[in-house]
Length: 253
Image 1 (cartoon, rainbow, N blue to C red):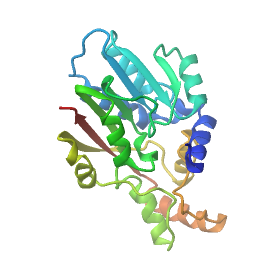
Image 2 (cartoon, helix red, strand yellow):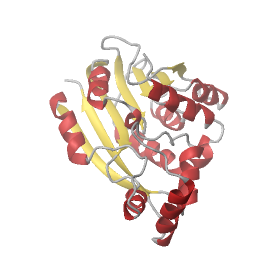
Image 3 (cartoon, rainbow, N blue to C red):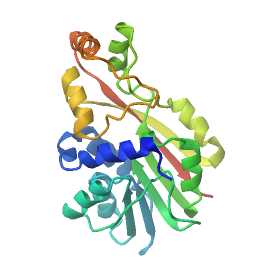
Image 4 (cartoon, helix red, strand yellow):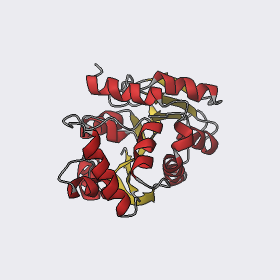
């Protein structure tokens, strides 16, 4: 069952579908890096690949280029994103699905990939277990998700004004490694990806342009005056921030 928060997330991404690509510089970089990390995987013709959170198809294109003979199913929680991907020429099987609650059952995929989607999940360890269960023996899950240091300077600007940002709490590299520990053959790594946009207003606009502005569940939105103080502080410190991205792999025995 889709929660109220998941409905908000889906609606936010649906509203951003038409403008998403223009603001998704970091998302494009992360998708390419993730595909490169998985690129050594050799799949037989007709192997099955599942993508979680395909959006407009940034990672989907990378997957199709690397494994053109595979059977690719690309999913997203927002039907409008699926429609946008289809109109952009994505030829994979496209379907609307909450990746945290996959509709598939049993081991049936040789490769699962997901780029910058898992941070929206309510229960990441449970979601990882569900996706692991969909892997055939020898199959792998490769993913990229947000790390604890993401937008650290934006959080610091809030803290300097005695306020808290609406950003969710993301895991550290060590926490993700511990999360994956029980799955056996795993690996984790991290990277910092600078956001090209500079300044508080540009950062807020970036979040909205890509549909990533749904705050953590317990967040109380700031009033205009408080937000101006945060933006002024952030801009005064240079107005720069980064995505801290965690990359993970789970390979089924």
